[in-house]
Length: 256
Image 1 (cartoon, one colour):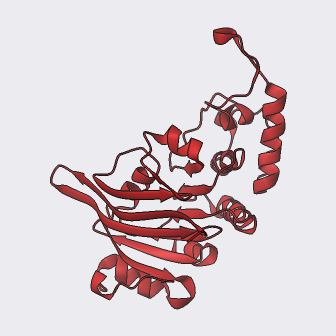
Image 2: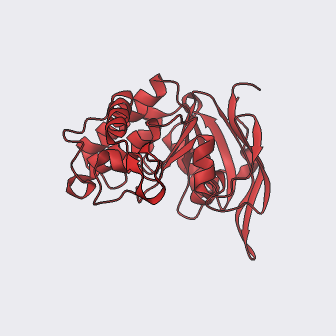
């Protein structure tokens, strides 16, 4: 189907005798926002590590934007158009906002090898455009990350996904360490991405957040996908039943 941006078929990851992920069949359509839920150790992070090239799957296929992929590493996944916001943010504390957005992808004004000159103006302008696109408000772009609040740091990490031509955004617990006001700001950014038609995978334990933000919920348990449900066809109690195993994979039916 032409509207599918990401599909996995039988994606499996083993660490020795441990099956961390088994036969994960997953589909994401263009413009769709999907939540991945599950208890700790359910396989959520393992799944994302395979998608983003952090690890190589033991077997299975990843089809991204119509092409089968096996990313050699996170940079390859990023170059293909997958932008990921991890829990640890991966920001450089002593750099300002534009420098963080373009870390590893700096714009060069004059390419003189080890003495190349950065195009700081172009990076600053692109940063401002990314902030506008995501609705992120940062009062001072030249402020270092170290001097920002947790919410501002998270917003910078999210804005980084909009500074480049991303085809898919993955967010791993983006509000886990934030207060109420900062959480609301990040959730508004996710809604802005939805309005812009950006597909997104959201890993979250926050049931209220999931039901507020996504179209579909996929539940992992013990390394397997046990539920794939449209938001309007389920509720929090139903999701908890799948997470805890009160409902099992034998009842699993794919959402259309």
